[in-house]
Image (cartoon, rainbow, N blue to C red):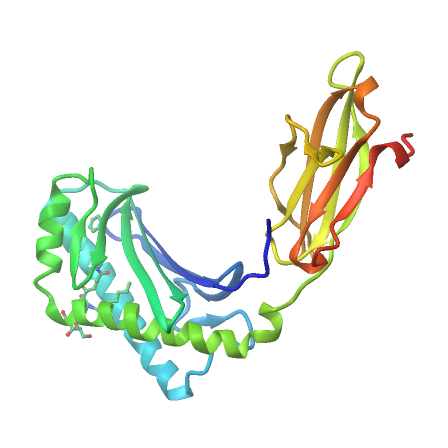
Length: 283
Ligand code: 7LP
């Protein structure tokens, strides 16, 4: 059952496309929990803030230093890949995705990861103090890791980002973004019937809309007993940055009486929303 979120994970994604020998672009995106905080498009020289609190508790100067590290990295990365492609005889076009993240754990500890994918498949990750090929990666990823592992300076920078900077950034963001991160918005819920799936059956739909944050549990039940065959849809975004979900049930018309839809959400505390099909006036 959903609980007020107590831990937030920080996630960064780099997407690099190399179309041919000369055309390439690299974009970065990063989130704290479900909120995107940063964007850095290929066309831009600087990292863009998507929230007024994106700088966390870093000073202007600390942020400049961090940004400079990333500017150097972006240039070097592109140059490196062109070189690797030649050495390893890889074919264009190629897509490289690098994802990294950090989770704050109890007792002031944290857990971080960094991994890279080539053409959508994992090729390597950073473990402890070195680059390691992914299980089932192509044979050249051994060679690639060997080469990357010779660069002590870069390994130290990666370790510093993963284990010092990211956790520090996240701790700051939890302070500067506090009110937005703690935001709770209650859902409304209503029932409707969909097109009958087959003669003598009803298609019951329970709509839940306007809730925040995203975790929610919606079930069809008879008394306390959850109905088998409940179909949960995908949680969809509303335009006002709240969420929407519908949960459906196919039942024999005669069995619809006594069914209810139950909504559990952190904003509701213990006060689940319960809607009874019997009370619902079908049109
Ligand atoms: C920052 C260090 O991506 C994701 C965060 C990584 C931050 C790394 C850095 O920019 C490059 C420059 O290094 C040189 O200057 C440094 C000081 O500025 C140090 O002195 C360093 O010793 C010196 O060498 C460096 O060029 C680096 O190689 C850039 C890229 C690093 C990198 N590696 C991991 C991901 C590779 C994934 C490739 C996957 C792939 C490759 C080829 C084909 C298919 C798939 N360092």
